Image (cartoon, rainbow, N blue to C red; front, side, top):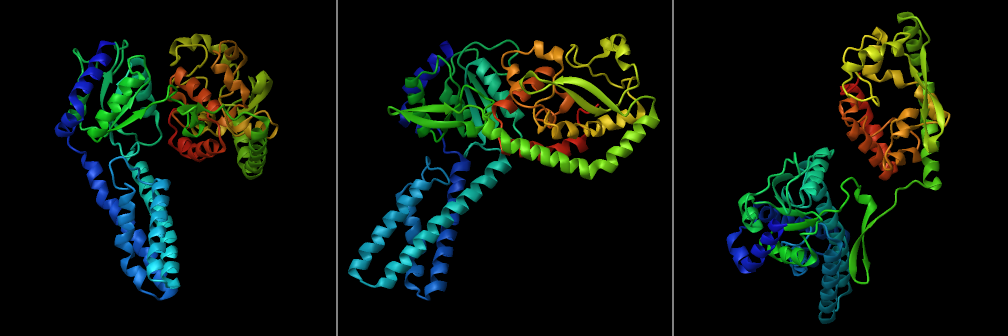
Length: 475
């Protein structure tokens, strides 16, 4: 608590002027200005060239590039607070330029002048937004930035900071570099964040680390007034202030800012679990599963014969599992163990890598057959689950199917996974499979249910082949 108060007081005493003198502008921000100017100049040049080709008149194209850059500058498109692809400033610049063209037309009443200017403005506005957004998408995906932030400082309580750092590490794309963590309370035991031994001067830390943004986490020590003061100090220092939501495992599509009585509130949209949203998914699942059965029928027949020849017993392994809404179904897999494998399980319990009854995995399991070892590592033992998908018991993508004993031990959050059908593949399967700890696998399953969307299913399906080929965590 004392840390947060000292940070706020120090930042208040520093004053905007002192901060501006003590902190240099980030190199990344200044180096972005020539790039943006070049992009906007290219957009204007392409628009001018289009007008020249259409009308064969040179007057508007000759003066359009510098004038377009001037109108963009008037709308602060190159200031420190301007985003790279904001729509409103570009539209305002277009309107101002159109008004200027209309005024010029009054003094030089030539229809072709106004005609060419309006065409050039529409082309330039579209090209400017398009080129800027392409540049931003490429930069963010390639460098793991948050906006323009490559280096960030995390400010907040120890527990919230640890959750945010874990969420950033779990991201599928490279995230920004966390250069410092300033805690506003005592550190949690085992936390990897550094707690300063004395009062923290946040602005000195910002100068020392040369960060691009400060991520503030919710907590009692960071009230509205302190955040407002901090935003002014960081603005003068050329550093962004980002406010993290309370929930880390929420996709951006579920978050929206809603003004209520003039107060901006963050809306968390409910998970998409209605019957209407399920129908397209179920139809797609069954059609793709049926197509997979038809295409893979020769392979599955060969595997079934191999399993029978490799060891005595049936080709398929059947087990009762729990599906959507707690309904039981029979899960199908190719048999990968010798007959009577369950009788040997108690004698091997001390080798269980998970150390709990929920998951039982051991290295070089003596119960696994030669064929089963290959089928497990290549995930071919799960191909018969396509019949479960066609029957409506499972989905191509979803949480892991549970056994009955596991359901009784689920937490309230864990019970949400029963709201959807279990899947052949899922978030934990493409994120490490059996290498993940138990709590991480449960968290990923619940996260899938909360954040489900067709795009998420498509992403998991596209990542599944590479996870199978890598064989990470398969056994």
